[in-house]
Image 1 (cartoon, helix red, strand yellow):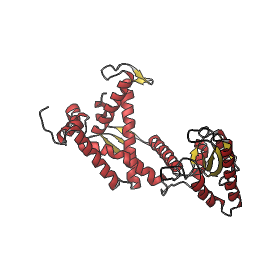
Image 2: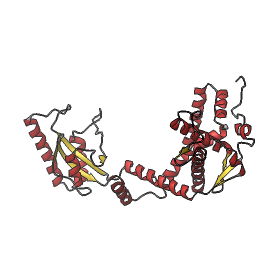
Image 3: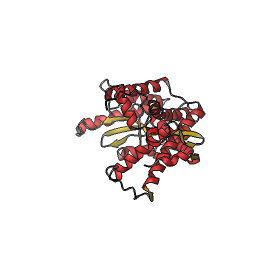
Amino acid sequence: QTATPMVDSPDVVEKLLGFPRDKALLTVNGNAVTAEEFLYFLTYVTETVAETVAGSVEELDWDGELEGTDVRTYLIDSAVESAEFYALIRAEADRLGVTLTEADQASLDSQRESVIAQLGGEDKYALYIQAVGLSDEGMQSLNAVNPLYYNIQDFLFGEDGEQAPTEEELISFAEETADALLAKHILIKTVADANEPLSDEEIAQAKSTAEDLLEQLRASEDPLALFDELMNEYSEDGRYEDGTLAAPDGYLFTAGQMVEEFETATRALEYNEISDLVESPFGYHIILRLPPVNDEVRQAYATQSMNDLVDELMASGVVETTESFASFDP
């Protein structure tokens, strides 16, 4: 407790098991997983599982079973799965030439500095990483995997990625996976801000205004462009303090998320078609249905595609253990 260790803390793995922390304990498709990294995963999963099923490691029944297998095997297999995932992400990044950006590295450095400050200095940080069995280098290597993961996702499936989806693919994805609809609307309200009904005279005026806007759209040679102009000028949907619409790009929604009248009318439209007047409890809507392609859909597509890629990598990964692997007992 009185020692003043450097950030490069003592090799806990070697003290516990008799071999250095950088020793290859297993390989994933030929890529080594070090003893310190595997020990970290095993410790993490053991503590997590023990707290979940027994309240603490001390209360865990080591002779019991988890999901049909004995406790030790379950924990070892879970740690191997985590180690395999990290190794595969690093290998895929290397294969694609994907690296950390300067912003990524700056963020990781900032996180490290923040942890050091919270713990009370470099010496306390050294004790902290020693307590979880890692070197400073090992800690930073683990932390780098998360930004690498998202950099791979963007490199492959982002808007300008090597496997970026076409608009048709995005539409199919949105329709098939989420039953997604995208629509803009011009709303002329028949209720006050507290959703109290307006007077009959005010409601009649709201309808007249909506009918006039619809007439302008029907007469326009470029109704889609005019729709945005009229929406921005007249729609009584939510607005920010500066007067701009809160949802100028429309609403992406699925079944049950909008009032029934709005959803039903949207589904009845073709893409880029403008509705007649649609009355709902909020007022009169003029709806423009759009292909369900926006940043939210693109992100969901990229996320799903990356999940699918990871599943493929994990399914084809080859894990081989060394003789030292047997030294690890949860």
